[in-house]
Length: 104
Image 1 (cartoon, rainbow, N blue to C red):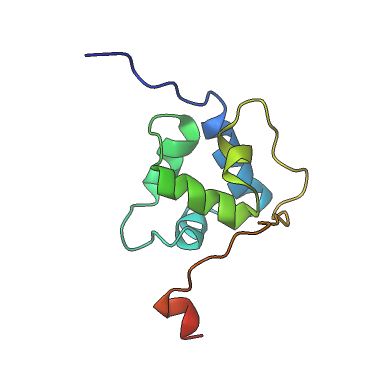
Image 2: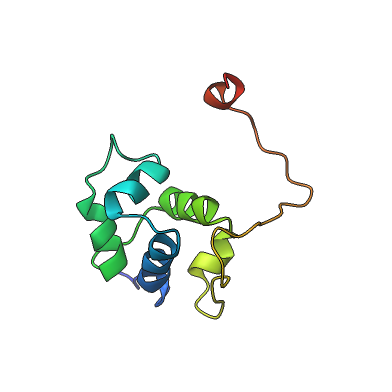
């Protein structure tokens, strides 16, 4: 059925490192990812053990929670910063505001 797409070898390790460096339980991580209503906390364990690979949008949420670029999470040749959350800067990128954010 074709060639499987290449997967980052260190993804599970980095996802676990993000959660642990932030001092969060798996349930707390789920809340920070804003998935507490759509996902069971056991899914975090599956991501961290490499049994499952998160969706691209979930990886993006991990990166935002950690304050790093998504590339830092998925590129096996890059290490996460020593201190999380980091202070990533998005030069020249403007984010859309959502109704939830604008209501604050």
